[in-house]
Length: 137
Image (tube, rainbow, N blue to C red; front, top):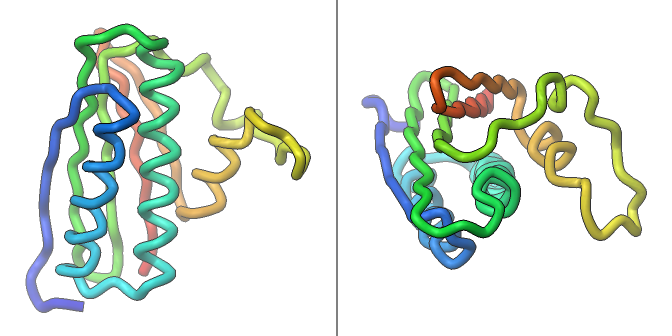
């Protein structure tokens, strides 16, 4: 772990192809932050799954949307905050998540996100959706 914090921010178009760019950027920041392979993998998987959900459900295939990601790696903790102006997540969805069957082809995203990080917080206010993922390192 480096002596100094590793901050960063990136904005992408709400497009599945752009999520790949976000993942590559995050991978580089995790490396810069000295994260172990498993912690970096968990953060990337949770972030990609969440960003894909924003594209598919939040913006529902419409063009022109944007996803923001703010990152802070410092003192044994990584905090990722995803923001968007898409359709908000239904209230309580993160609290009601149940494991999907192994053969399910959809409906597994929130469970994947929750299994990869230690804390998931979601809020929406005045058209801005904010998903915060916290991973203890």
